[in-house]
Length: 395
Ligand code: NAD
Ligand code: MG
Image (cartoon, rainbow, N blue to C red; front, side, top):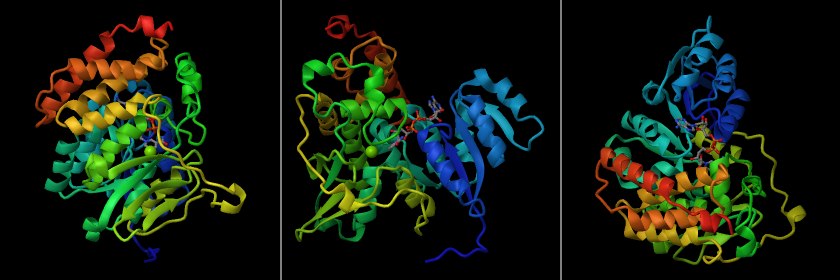
């Protein structure tokens, strides 16, 4: 199916437009100006970057979650047709405005309410924000079904699976295989990992990403979060979701069928491919990524994950198995632990230790409603922030 030149431009909202996924989304849009019309952009505190994006894209509405920069943003956009608002509710409003396609690219559980706001108006949502599904997966997927929203996975592994998953023959799918680069410490001894710095942890060997997901990739918590994400997106149990370490990040994930076929999606490690798949959906569009040169690559390698050096994988699987509030607690504790690590307050290995402690300490209350989720999330954050790990950090 080829899109007709007479088609009206797709109206786009980007939640988290100033981040890494936001940048890649805008890059694709600016290369196809006649096909897209940006109606809303949001950011947390970086009003300068949001103002610069708004001047280029002329959205109807921009929202800054942190109201501190409101005056500056308003002044920077004076004389333009863009309406400026601030505060978390304004970010939800950006998601609620009529648009044809919403990129959910806020990092962390902060993205839950705005992404739900888009889901609740039955929008087509390109989902990068995996934490939404980790902290409130059952509730989130119930809202997707109730409001007939369309969810397009953007996370590269889930996008790969989405491309090769035969939804009409789900009973013939044995399992899915999430590939993982293994991060910058894939070959490191545990004792060396104790002393890694934030700069080392955010230097991912293959992907260029925001700080939080880069640390998650280094601890492999990212893959743990992705197992939970896959469980909700594809309706598969823990034991039907494998993890395979693949350092080249070329095979982005696979689906194994009952007849012995395993289908995979391959590509260079560039998020503009999965974003383009979601942006063009249901058609394919061109993306400016390099094409794969397998002859030049020569070899693709695979290995089993090491649960001893990467305990986050074990914690995430256990949380999924426990269900209920456990993934909510895991996610919140991890967000706090990563922030503490990036601030130089705790060591790298303390991240998993803080998550484990929080999972053992916070009661597994019901998470049937959004208020329940937010209460458990808040309690887990308090426990994770208070956990004293000075002995481990000093190791
Ligand atoms: P990033 O840190 O580069 O950007 C995050 C965006 O969220 C920014 O625009 C920021 O202003 C906004 N934000 C942060 N806190 C906020 C708050 N409290 N309220 C409102 N907005 C807030 O992160 P990223 O790398 O672009 O990742 C975004 C999401 O996409 C994450 O959930 C991540 O796991 C997922 N993802 C990213 C990649 C990648 O390659 N970067 C790949 C797969 C999935
Ligand atoms: Mg991923």
